[in-house]
Amino acid sequence: MTAAAPRRAAVLGHPVAHSLSPALHRAAYAALGLDAWSYDAVDVTEDGLPGFVAGLDETWAGLSLTMPLKQTVIPLLDHVEPLAQVVGAVNTVLLQGAGGSRVLVGANTDVHGLVAALGEGLHGRPVVTAAVLGAGATASSTLAALAQLGCASPVVYVRALSRAGALMRAAHRMGVTPVFRSLDAAAAEVGRADVVVSTLPPRAADPLAAELAGPVSGVLLDVAYDPRPTALSVAWVAAGGVSVAGERMLLHQAAEQVRLMTGHAGPLAPMSAALEDGLGAGS
Image (tube, rainbow, N blue to C red; front, side):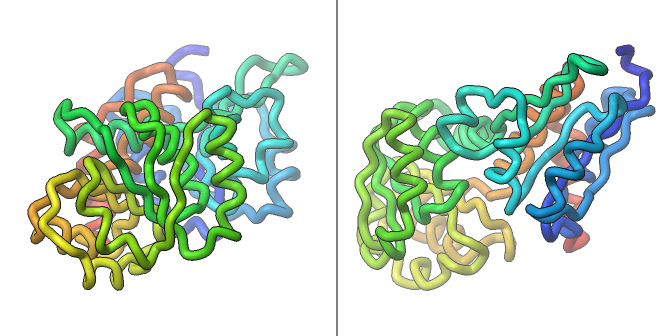
């Protein structure tokens, strides 16, 4: 394959029309001179995913996956990279080889995105204590990211322990030992952590923001970015902490996808500008 060869990539999900991934990847292709490359958003349900994957031809370089497909895709792949395996979520599919030797490889760039985004706020500071809000798929990636940053025993705040089984199993595969506590206790406790990552859905952390007990001094990453800034981010900064916007994780994980799919480092500056434009347009 040459850089000029036409290649296709896309983000799949349901719904997916709101995705900012096309703006990010297209900006990267333009900056890299990959004029023949294209990137689209395709609405695909869990039931429709096997048929879509089976229809991929040699023009395809890769796929980005959003919910609810990050687990559904795993049985459809020929190989899953170790990090994605232990996290239990694939957000990137790479098409390697050709013809009968084509191989579908699953990877996870969310962990990279979390580590890089948190690094923007940490500036090299060590992470000894950490807190995670929520127990969904992003929480699994967060546990892996925190382990890379040096904290293998974070506190995870959940609404109901009965719904944290998948996260507990992921933690066991990773060899990390989180402590689980009720989300009701988070407002009074998270201020003592070096790092806090909220993986809660948009606006779900608003009640916690209203009850946050300061002062705080750590770094917050709220992966939600609607509205901008989130209520939790505003409260955190007002209490003395440092906040990293959730879209920075989106930026860095997309840059890593660009690297994996094209072989070129993702150009952060033009991708960041495209992200800001997309968010400003309300997309």
